[in-house]
Length: 376
Image (cartoon, rainbow, N blue to C red):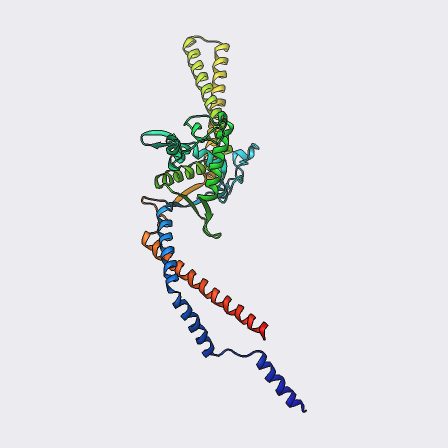
C-alpha cells in the first residue's frame, strides 16, 4: 500500500471519529428542544406566574433606601510658604502641617469614633431634642416593638435593648458596657453598609461621600451632621498647634499692654503730684518712667507684628473644604415599581423553567444513549 493510500485512509478514519455538525443538525436539535418545551408549556406558564408573584411580593416588602450624596474638595493642604515665620524661629514649628492630608478626610468619614460621636450628637425629632442613636432606633422600629412588647430577652437576667437608652447630654465616659457595645455595633454596621467615601479620580481633588438609609429624613440630617463634624475635626486638628501659638502670643500682647497702661498711669500720677517740684530725684523718676514706656511700647509693637505673621500662617494652613454638590429633597432612592417587579419575576421564572426543561431533556437523552450502548 502506497503512502498516499495510507494518508487517505487515516483522513477518512479521522472524519468518522470527529463527524462535523451541519447547520441542518443544529436546526433539528433546536426544533427538538423547542417541541419538548412546547409540550411542557403549562409548566413554563406556571413557573412564570409563580416568579411574577414572588417578584411582586419582594418589591412590596423591600425597604426603600434613600441616598444623601455630597461632592466636596479639600484645599489648603500645601505647606505654608512662610518658612521663616515667627513660629519656626522660636522652635514652635507647625507640627500639624502634615499630620493630615486631604485623603485622610475620607478615612475620618469611615472612622468608627467619628460615627459614634455623630450618633451621640443632638437632633430635632417631633419637637424634642434626642440623639441620632435614639433616632436610629426609632427609624428601625425598635422603640415601637419595645412598646408593643415584641422584644423580650430570652433570659430573665438578660438586659434587653428596650431597657437601654441614649439620652442627649450623657457623658460617654459614664456609658455602661451594654451601651458601649450597642453603639459600637451600630457604628460598625453603618460604616460597612451605609457609608461610602471615595475619591472620584486620583488626578482630581473631588471627593464623594454617600450615606444610605431606609429613612429619608434621617439620611438627610445624619449625613449633614456627620460630614460637618468630620470637617470641623479635620480643620481643628490641622490648625491646632498654630492656633495655640497665636493664642499664646495674643496672651503675651495683652499682658504687655496692661503693663504699658499701668506704667503710663503711674507716670501721669507721679508727674501730677510733683509738677511744681524740682530736683534730681523727680527728674530721674520721670526719666525711668519714660524709658519703661518706650521699652514696653517697642515690645508691644514687635509682638503685634509677630501676631500678624501668625495670623497669616494660620490662614495659609487652614484647609478650605468646599461643598460642590449636596443633597436636596426628595432624595434619590432604589425604589422599584411593583409592575416592574412583577414583569421581571415572571420573566426569570419562565426563563429558569425553560433552562431546567432543557437540562432534563439533555439528561434523559444522554442516559438513554448510554443504555443503548451498553445493550449493544
